[in-house]
Structure formats: structure tokens, C-alpha cells
Length: 435
Image 1: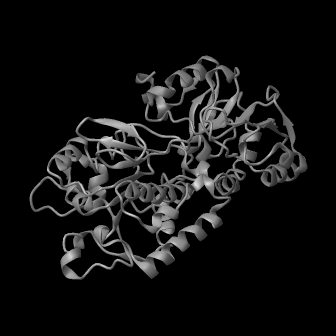
Image 2: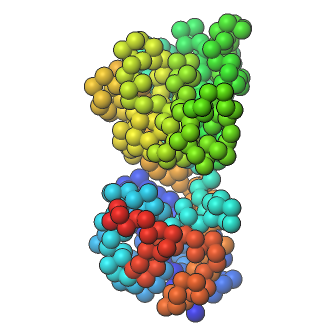
């Protein structure tokens, strides 16, 4: 059997303009797989209604005829329909309190939920994601924030020329602008008062690689974490370069047992045997870019207590935190709230333990935009759609009247079924306690 597939408009977030399937890929699915696709009309989607119509795809406000609904972010509770299958980033697998009402409603209506985040191969590696676009947009935003913060401090720098990621027509234009900033740094240098300018990256995966791709458009000298304390002693730091350091797990934690070497697998399996050591690096950083996926079992990079102590002792050099991962009070405990593209930054005041919108105040500027890929909507959508389209035929052909194991979904998609016909699946029954 083939289910009619609906592409839902994104209406939970004002700035969300991405599409899960772009017009060209929707046309390919319709022509090559005989899948009927209906796109819900949207005035803000980066791909217009007309582009879908030109691709031969039906555009309508009404998706009631579609048994499978594909989107990106959460869906308003009132719009769920009984017995339908929804494919989206649900943000429920950690028991996120703000989305439990949505999940409860889906269960009440006997819906099936497939979450992109849990579509994995046999080794647990994610298969459907937005690649490094969060990192690309997040680093542009972080450099923008750095320029504004330094300007507020009375320090004029080439970073003032960096604009918001969403202000550029496309990624190529943004990169050209960053390269121009890099040329000015190479030619004229940075003010002596901020030399050496050190940018640290927590993590080295897809998100980090995207962020580093942007920073590397500037004149960058990479150093290792162990050299941070001696940076100003081993050489005269260059004012014509930015210093980059990439932190790995062994820079973030050490065994509690004295004399034991760091073991990466043991750290993942038994984080309780390790303690955090990232505070050793904080005094040497001007910018910290967080690209980590974090769980409470692991040590934080920066706690509120440490930030408060360093401010009290006048030792907090950190000007900007680009929290691309955006786990509220997670690895960066100072990330006390997520932000949206129209108001992307706030200052975290460690003494008062509060966030002050903007770039002025006592404490680091925190950039914590929750939907960063939406700031590069066209390229991010094309990348995501190029992956998703390979899985849509199997989802469209699945017989959701049968048991999960025999409905026809391939294993990577079955692993991502959070709820099936109104019941949490065995791998996700732990969510019940949050419901």
C-alpha cells in the first residue's frame, strides 16, 4: 500500500523557514516512486508554494487526506489527527517537559511518531540530520556577537563587519564577508589589548567541523590544549592571527582514581569514574564554542559556580559563548535559556544569576539560538531533503495497520519509532515516567 504524504508548514517558530523535502526531491519521489505528495501552503517557507507547483506538487492548506505527515520541528497540539503517522524532530526522547503535552496528545489519538534524531544504523550513528549547518550558522552568529561585545567595550575590530547569518542571501555571501574580515586582520591586525585572541571548540564532530569551517576563513593558527598556558610565553602572539584550539574528551575529564590513564571507552561507559577538568582551560579563552551532545552523567564544561567565582576574582576572560548545542543548563550551565533568531544573545551575569538580553552587562555573552540551521534555510533544507528522500518511499509504503515488526519499515526507521499506534515502543517506554 502507499500512503499519501503531506509536508507540513512550520508554525511553532516564527523564524523556522526550512522544508523537510524541497521541490525537486518531492517531484522525484512523485515521479519515480508513484508517491502522492501534498504540500501545506506556507507564506514564509524558503521554498515558495509556486516552486512546489512548478515541480508538479499539489499545494493545499488541507492535509486531512494524508496519512503520513512530514515536518521538521514540533507541531501544535491542536492540529494532530487521530491515527496518523508524524515524522519530525519531536524533542521528547530526554523526557523534555515542554513537549510532554504534545506526546500525550499523540498517544491519546493513537498516532505514530517517527523521530529523525533516532534514525540510526546498526552502530547507533545518526542517518538523518542537518549536517554541519548548525555549526556554520552558529559560528557566524558567534563572530557577530564578538564584534558587538568588543565594540561595547570600546574596542574596534574587523569583527564589527560580520552580520547575522540570516542577513546574508546565502552561505556563499556569508563566507565572502568573513574572508574580507580575515583580510583586514591579516593586513592590519587586531588591537593589542585582545592579543592573543583564543577561540576554543568543545567537540570535533559534524557541528564542530561546520563551525571551524567558518573560523578557518580567517587567519588561524591552531594550537593544542596543553599549550594554552604557555601561549604568551613560548612566542610573541601574533596580532595578525586568531588562535584555535579543539578540545577532546581527555581535555574535559580525568579519572578520579589517581594515576589512571584516560580511557575514552571507559569514560563513555562509566562517566561516574571521571571528574571534570575543563575549568583549567577557561582562563585562556576569549570565545568558547560548544558543539557537544551532553548528558547529565557527564561533567559540565562551565558551571554557574565557576563562572561566579572567576568573575569575583576578576579571572573571567571569556567574552562570548557560542552554545551551538543549546542544551539549557547543560554542558554550559550559564546557558539559562534558548534564544531565537530575532533576539539571539544575552549576557549571563554570574553574580546575579540572570540573563540580560543583548551584549551589555557583567559576564559572558551567550549565543544560544535553538534553530540555527534555519538561518541558512535554503542550503540546510536541500542537504536534509537529499538524505530524507531515500527513506520516504519505505515510510509511504508501510502498512501501519500491522504490528511494528511486520509493517514494512526498514530497521533504521523502526529504531526511530517513539510511539506506534498510540503506545510507546519498548525502547522508549522510559519516557512514561516523564508523562
